[in-house]
Image 1 (cartoon, rainbow, N blue to C red):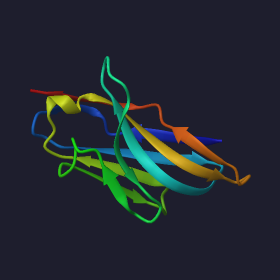
Image 2 (cartoon, rainbow, N blue to C red):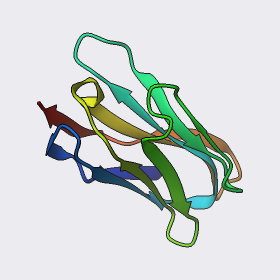
Image 3 (cartoon, one colour):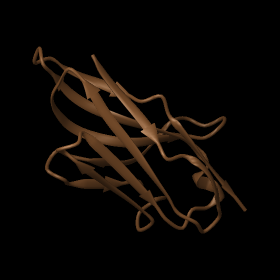
Amino acid sequence: QVQLVESGGGLVQAGGSRRLSCIASGSIFSINSMGWYRQAPGKQRELVATITSGGSTDYADSVKGRFTISRDNTKNTMYLQMNSLNSEDTAAYYCNALVTVTSRSTISAWGQGTQVTVSS
């Protein structure tokens, strides 16, 4: 019903920046909250940042001041601007969206993930 596709991952040097995008498509009536999560090898998936439909944001302490989450509701797209990257940011990054579909039910959709690798 709903597909989320992330892009923008890759290899970046420590101290560098990267911008991730997540595009939602499918039987979408409205998108409520959205968020970025990440999972490093051998670790549990953790919340990175969230953004409501109204634009209110929240961040994990580890990324505050370095990462910025945003969204363009007209394009069903969410972004994550990542600055001052370090090796601890190396992970697969996943987008999540709470979506009301055209049948008016609400689902939690996940993307397939995009890998970010920070080299020191």
